[in-house]
Length: 264
Ligand SMILES: C[S@@+](CC[C@H](N)C(=O)[O-])C[C@H]1O[C@@H](n2cnc3c(N)ncnc32)[C@H](O)[C@@H]1O
Image (tube, rainbow, N blue to C red):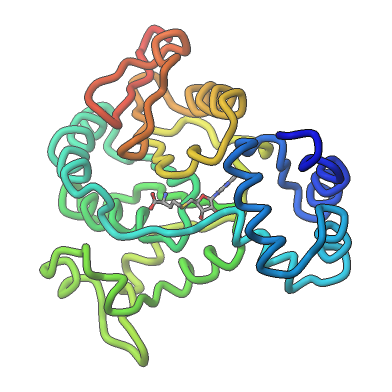
């Protein structure tokens, strides 16, 4: 970060961390700075000191700032060809090793990702008591995920036969069938700081790390590695490549799918 612009940043960062547990230093400098500058302009704030004072005094603004930082755009079956691969190759492989899978969507946003997995898992292995965990740092997204009501346009990437099977119309949208929604446990969790769940067969972490520094990413991928059982998979976003995959002990099986090698 440029010295002139970074004035007040340490104070802002310390205060934000105290208030939310989120460490701004783990987010990419330039990208973060561009976004902070646009936030300052939007709210007519002179500098980071003014921003950090506002965070302390105005809880609604603090929430808005968190939302702004952790953009939570998501959709059902994001990169459909990858979800096809998940359904046709990865899940069957995992099910051969264990009939009850432990699956974690890290950075789950509004829940579209984990509900997509729940729907295809039901096709591959119906009602077998799998564990589906979905976590996010953003409580507003988690509330929406738990409510499981989506607007018509949020379902545009959902195959029609799955909408017919798993959604019912409610006032102002479509609600996920209870029998599916109840299979998922949603939790507030900061993947950069909090203890990681263990013994996972599959971790989805998609379109989250783009905002993290290289060091934060490296540490995170090592933590995911440790959370997977040997033979388990990490499913990343379409543009996310783990450059140090081999060094960590992952094998790239196909774009977006990394397997923790059994010997690792
Ligand atoms: C762009 S969304 C991606 C949602 C979904 N994975 C997908 O690909 O459609 C990024 C999500 O990551 C969450 N996030 C950002 N930093 C996080 C952190 N440190 N721990 C947990 N979640 C985080 C945000 O709150 C947001 O909901």
